[in-house]
Length: 309
Length: 320
Ligand SMILES: Nc1ncnc2c1ncn2[C@@H]1O[C@H](COP(=O)(O)OP(=O)(O)OP(=O)(O)O)[C@@H](O)[C@H]1O
Ligand code: SF4
Ligand SMILES: [Mg+2]
Image (cartoon, chains in turn yellow, blue):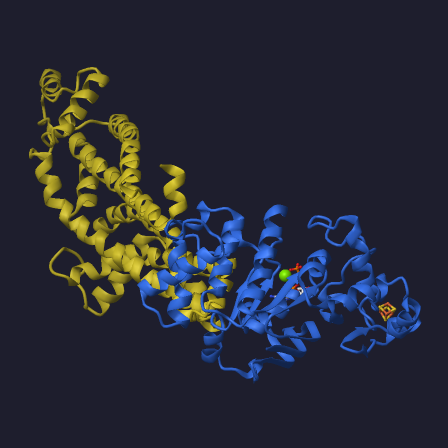
């Protein structure tokens, strides 16, 4: 049942990825400027330029260029970075692990801490705790990541000297970036968990669970939590894209290598193949995140499994 | 088996329930009737010890079950009674089961909790109970999810849950309100059979006087959070002494169904915030006099029945 559902969802990804690839391809061409300018030596003639343009196939029809590109992608052929003059695949392979570590940790941080805080605030209904949680949630959902990053750097790195200001050496360099990306996520997940738990508590079937003689703890963990998890999983799945997006700025601010840093540099140089590859990886991650979220939800909720398959 | 004496319930400063008394024995069915908002469900929740769940508390009275007062029972001990010796059936079977879990485990819980059975024994018990409730192919049903079943079937599952630990008392809070008319009759007959076969004490909450007439031995009539009349079903139907009971009975021949919920009586049910002074029924009572608006009536007891009306004796004289 769940396999069939997963397969159907995978099929649905085909048209989606096609549209996304077209968009990514077009965005890059709509940017002003082109990478050839970065390759030209001072005093080159228009003929030199035309030659280079032809060499990279940039003079061909856009449609043809698209199909050449997507065809290459399918064969895992990411091409050659125009400005950096290295295989794009190498660049991606070099940077991806950094982003995955950062994103993965930020994801873990925001989901575990967020769900714990949300559960505590739903179960322990104390006025002071409530006010604290609400303030925290407001802060977490309004403070921009880069600003928080700068504050954290100033305080913990510059003033206290606990963590390095930038770079990617050892685990200490991960602490601040993970906090920066994860903070907003913690607040969001905590809020969704809390609301979902309170909603679940009001359901009719909870009365009957108590009437069976189950303890409140059992009811919370075996019945209410699964219900609360449904919206949390949806949010977390969407969050994967958000976290990767956040990684772009945070990597930049903290001077960490990663897909985000690579993308920003390549954008500056109009290095089309690199930009396209980075965007494609990000889009892929978002699609995978959504897919995993949907499948996880379907595996938890029999009603969804039946409706959609 | 179960006796409720002068029960009162409050939420904060409002007191939607006061002075409710009744008792049931094994093999007996007591009906609690009254319009929407009269406090029937609150009475059920009080007996189950589940008021804290909805933010309420017991302000007075006693709930005596098998010789012990439940109002002072600690939560841990109460949990052993709930689902063990006192079973609850709720109004809406569509929403009374956890939609994310299969039927089997939800029913198994009861035998595991109260009969100390392991998973296999509990499942065998579940299938046996489903079988006695005339549910076809119990093993198959156990593997289903709630949304895959009809309302009537789900209500049988809920009944199975309430019965799994062989309780002494069953509280059914409008068990058929959400069901089709034909299914309603089946469920009521099922409950009636259970009382006889298993020597249960059944508290049947309903707003349908004809169901009361068919199945109950005793009745409590509730109005605005109070018991206004109680007694053996024959007495209540032959010689109702409270004008509200009389009005309820007068509604039966008009074909009272769920949608027509006692619309035969003029006026509207008071809500907790505007419970009238004096006799709560006086704004709608055809026999009300000056005293009714100022003094709350006491119970006028006659034999094993009682009515809270200033003119209960007069009514006796008239009908005699
Ligand atoms: N959680 C609550 N907080 C405050 N007041 C409540 C609460 N639950 C019930 N009440 C009040 O108690 C009164 C009795 O409610 P109850 O649910 O017992 O009525 P009922 O007789 O079961 O009606 P129905 O036929 O609609 O089920 C209502 O008027 C309602 O306003
Ligand atoms: S006490 Fe008065 S108002 Fe109340 S039921 Fe009797 S006659 Fe009617
Ligand atoms: Mg009710």
